[in-house]
Image (cartoon, rainbow, N blue to C red; front, side, top):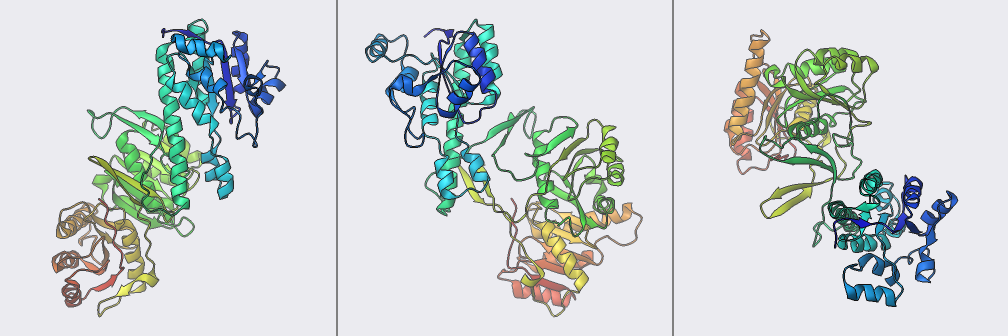
Length: 529
């Protein structure tokens, strides 16, 4: 094996024909013999490129609707033969196998076919067999063979040939061999994951994970951690699919927090009301609904103005000029929304470091998704929490029932609590959070933190009473003791929503009755660790 190896013969067989003709003409100009198959060969021939069908090389016709065309020793021998091995060279001469120095293959569009909702038979037909087999063979023999599997790498290949007088370096071949194996690995992962879904397997024996690099990051959660951002190929609207119009490159923490913000604000139907969520360190510091976006933003901001500084803002409706004007009054890291007016974009343009992300839709908060979490030696896999509770699901367990207005605030608080790190306590009044207690080791501590924030913001706003006075209170899991509930009552809560299910439910219900609270059970909890 030598570092530089010339390209004399290439096999081009692609599903995506983008850039194929230009690539082939550039190779032809360098004297490279071009082999191809089926539609690729027809496309090249129509463009005037001299091309030889693989069937001419193998002396075997394509058959079975193209299922069998490259699975042949004269193809795989040409890819796998070690050019510096005398036995291999002798076998090539004996069996008239020509070496293939470049393989350009992109696979049948299986992932796209699944995404379009095709039926089972169509998806199966779009599983590529010959392509992955050739890719794996060529990549294994990267000492001599160059493997290109992405249209985006055509220019890099031509630049490499230009720099090395029609040859590729070992480093180039090795790098693209890794890319090739990652592609076949992600392809197999997509197929196996889809089949597990078709079979309704909750826990398949083996589970494959795959991602495509979207962005290298300067660092991870902290500056000493390396990081990168990969997409999973899903079409779910959010930070991975958003278009960034302006601002600095997103950081690891920006991406994590923006995802949390957009998933939360999507809980609120934009057809019913505007909604805004302000996130800090993946927890909401203010969430509100309003008749307009600017009203919702102001209400969310007034929940915790201190924490909102440097936060992430998510909107459930397109950003307008009035809301944009309000947002730029303080330092904000990221704004994500399903669209923006031209006036709003102009207002943001004056804040060059403010990142504006636009999507074409909101994520569906009830759509099933698989969630992963790495632990030492393994990966935890579960369904994403898409649990939903409506008024019809609530059980009134106290002597006093909540009023209609209280019910609306209770349901609002419940949606927010679902997105707050456990233990979570959320105070809500008039469709806006007024206190959020997140991530404490006890539910009592979370109630205390939320109450303290509500009192502090009231003082900042010049109010005599805590913002929590007259509020609805949500707890993401049951109260194990009455103390947390009593703390919420002392803070000014008048009604409570919680899952129920504690051994001390009767004790907690009695405490609620004694305090004059209305309380409802959901029968569902929302732990978020």
